[in-house]
Amino acid sequence: MPNDYQTVKEWLIPYKENIQRNLGTFRKNYRKYLEEFDWEKSAVVDICYRGSIQYWLSKVIHENIIGFYFVADMSDENEFNKENLMIPCFQEEEDLRAEKSQIWKNHKIVESLYTAPYGTIKGIDKDGNYETFTLGNNQKHFIEREEMNNGINEFISQYTKIIRELELTVFDVGIDPKFTDALFGNF
Image 1: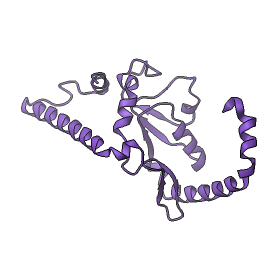
Image 2: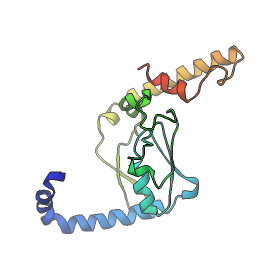
Image 3: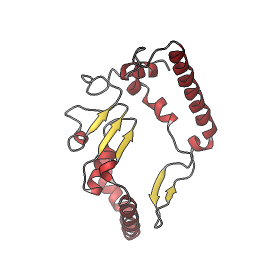
């Protein structure tokens, strides 16, 4: 589309009035929804990577927002990390682009585990309720996501049980961001 901007713009001319009307409604409903949050006590949480959602949300609410990420692009070339605080939780500090991170290398798998049963939100209605797109394969096969989540919970429960039985703590066995990242490398 960037190369065909003018062509696409011409295609949209007949729909301009409808688009502007719908955007106005969408904008009004979304702003009303966002006003309900205490932004001083809120943060963006995401798997990865550049912080564009955090950046654009901060522009809409006119406040900086903290963002917590599994991994993030903390390089100077990433224009989205300049105004808001981005905190990558599972990457080494010197690995600014998370290129060594197993989570980054496997982020598509990680993202497939985190999905909502109701689908992707496309907007907010006048009453503050979510409007969603048609259910996709992630929702049609949500039972598989629940089974994966149960397996992950079972693994964590067994691991922590063993640690307790050995009278150790998670710090004694080295469960830290490096361990977590390495675990994702075992997919």
